[in-house]
Amino acid sequence: MRHKIVAGNWKMNNNLIETEELIKDLKNELKTVKLSEETRVIIAPSFVNLHAATKTTEESLIEVAAQNMHFAENGAYTGEVSAAMLTSLEVKTVILGHSERRSYFNEADDILVKKVNTALNNELEIIFCFGESLEDREQDNHFKVVESQLKNALFHLKSSNFTKIVLAYEPVWAIGTGKTASADQAQEMHSFIRKLLATQYNQELANSVSILYGGSVKPANAEEIFSKPDVDGGLIGGASLKAKDFTAIIKAI
Ligand code: 13P
Image 1 (cartoon, rainbow, N blue to C red):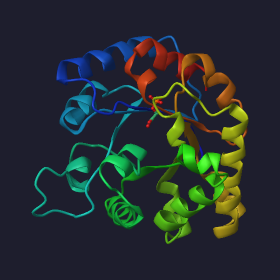
Image 2: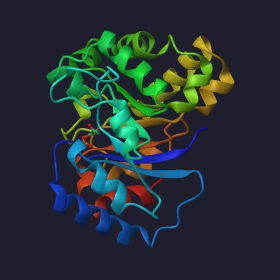
Image 3: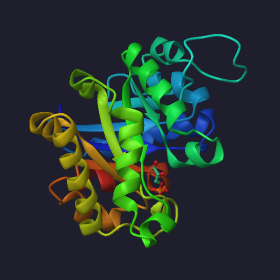
Image 4: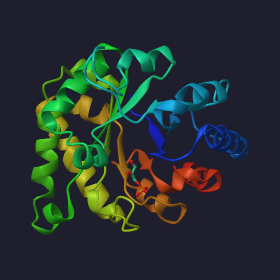
């Protein structure tokens, strides 16, 4: 179902104490916020702090997601984390395909297909990230690149699987750079993505999928980006690490 979503990707930040503190601060800040029923707030701390995060968010509206997982169900994969380990912690959502995973850890489409399938087999919801590089944008290849990222990792799925998929368009050139896509650039891409879904599946499915924008979303620009009809929320990096800033972004939804 299409929701408004503000999700914080904490990346490799915050130790155990800091994780608990930030969640407590966020819960406090959120006391003053009236969220509509269609709005979801998600945080994605590191693996080692997920258990503490699920405990600290109990009886709050904040949901907890993982930032990654391995594609195998279990086995000899030293240092990796499985889908079943996440679900055993009551984690219900996993971020897959983040550009940092793609570029620093060589996560190509073939690996992402396996991860997507394993996550769905374990009934995890997926926040699937994709987006073009600066070079792709400058060469006017951004639509082609996004289309192939979606086709290669997701378009083998049945339409019923899409109840468990949230899309996150994150142009690589806007991540952590302070350079946001304009609200019009975000809308243009999100509308393109919805048309792709309608062509590949059907209009009803296309209308039901939440499409988030990510890349230097801050309190100052969130409202304008979220005002666009095909932007259903944001995946926030840096600004999700401060309770006040993240709350201000949540208020903008
Ligand atoms: P920033 O908001 O820090 O640009 O990061 C965006 C991001 O990568 C979220 O996944």
